[in-house]
Amino acid sequence: MSESVPESWRKPLEPVLTNREARQLGGWLRAEEDAGKQVFPPRGQRLRALELTPLDSVKVVILGQDPYHGPGQAHGLSFSVPEGVKQPPSLVNIFKELRSDLGVTPPADGNLERWAKQGVLLLNNSLTVESGKAGSHAGRGWEAVTDAAVAAVAQRAEPCVFILWGSHAQSKAARIPELASSDRHLIIRSPHPSPLSAHRGFFGSRPFSRANAFLEEQGCGAIDW
Image (cartoon, rainbow, N blue to C red; front, side, top):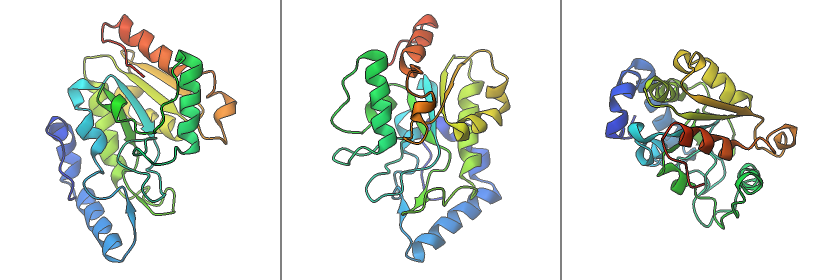
């Protein structure tokens, strides 16, 4: 795999990044690109979530499924898009709930780096996707890497908030023993913010205020959402 793993994540991720499956993933990705397929996000941005949020600074984990598959949308953070890119419907709904929950006026752009730099790990289950094909890189090996990252957070002594939107994120958390059996962390579950499911319980779930209340109670400091 050509991506450079940030220093704080190397120890927990090294075992999975040096095994046969990771080498196969790296070889497969190179072959896909050599065949002319567009892969998002571009090289150099695929571990952006880990770069912006060191392991020892994680306060909140928000799990996504895979990167946006439209040109220019994905930049390595779940649910986030670069400045100047139209906000996707799920992100629009996230900002609607943020306004309802905390009274925060939705920002003009959809770049969530400001969250990541405060300790919000915006991690997708798969870290790449083929252009125009949602879920196309699922089952190719990224899951072992991102499972290890989530487990590393769950294993720490420090309490953390895990925000699980939708069945995909919830099933990922359930297969990580350190998280599934933990009573140290706050786990917030709700439907996905997608327009297909947001009205089934995402709206009104108040994840942002609940996360901040827990963090303040634990003496960790709230997130400026």
